[in-house]
Length: 303
Image (cartoon, rainbow, N blue to C red):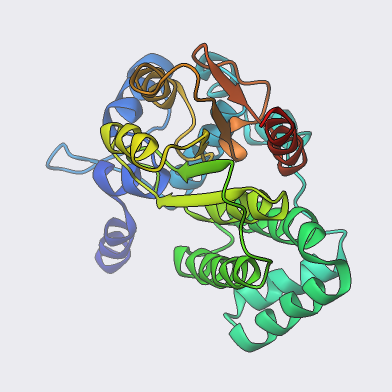
């Protein structure tokens, strides 16, 4: 009996570990506990809070709902079934697509050779543009959703991301020489660790015969502003994931808007930009890659 209790305690997570696993701050988790009574931590004899793996999965789902524009007071009290129903319309898990299902199985088993071969076949079959919008985008969304549901481990999510990023870089390198202008600076805000959205956006910029300039992820606001001046960027693209979308990101975007000349457009895309988001003024929110492509081509027409 004591051994069982010991094992259960070892599987519990501290609030810091939960914050790292869910991309939520420890303060946010504590506020939700006080205000809404969830999550409900396990109290150790020492008085410290500890959390179950099921709490992590639930918090990830709540974060996904918030990133899609729902308020904490609406989603936190929901049971699991109602929460799933609330965000189901915004998410395509792709189980009905046999090709996507097969690729997800390759991700689960970390079968690099087969996954690369399958993806290369798709590039040849559908071409670069459809590969990005119809293969990479839904696959990355499905991987992220399965990770949020606890059906994939972080190593498997990283495995898939690295392969997709590698192929997208190769795809860009195989395209005709990039145009001199317009220049689109692509980056993420501080705290945003996800890079795949940048690679997809950069490939779309190159396909539209514009020039992508990747600054990487987690870039300080002042450095983004300095880079705009250094390369004389015509526009700035910020990628926001579900993990970081929310009020804090909106505040950072508002600060960035003040640092960059008003004549330089700022466009925000990624899964965290979906769901009818309305952020700071002077910023364009793009919900998907098709809309992003249209925005690029419209910008080209203005050049």
